[in-house]
Image 1: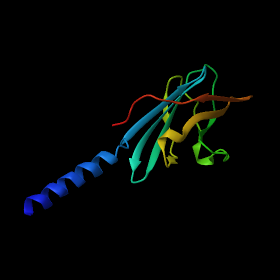
Image 2 (image 1 turned 60 degrees about the vertical axis):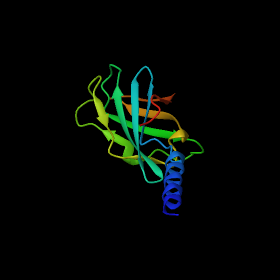
Image 3 (image 1 turned 90 degrees about the horizontal axis):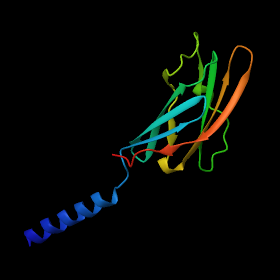
Length: 137
């Protein structure tokens, strides 16, 4: 009888472990002529918390940038905490990690980003698709 209980417990643990196939980490990346964006999502309980990193690839002197991560069924406005005001200018190819975290219930809902940025005299906007670059860990 004791062996049956132990065997049943082991089978249940194996089944439950097999059902939890959500990866711990997932990375999305996208690139345009002027920007590169990478978001590393880490699973925390039933949600994924993403940390966006932006990199300016252009040549103008950028003084301010806003990023909006667009998810499935998302129609919200830009997140003001994802606005980066630089005292100095963005340096070309410099990784800038955003303070605000992106929280999603499923990393599969991530679609694209829109970036608005300003130079000394003009403002620009660019959007592009993000692609999952790993299968998770």
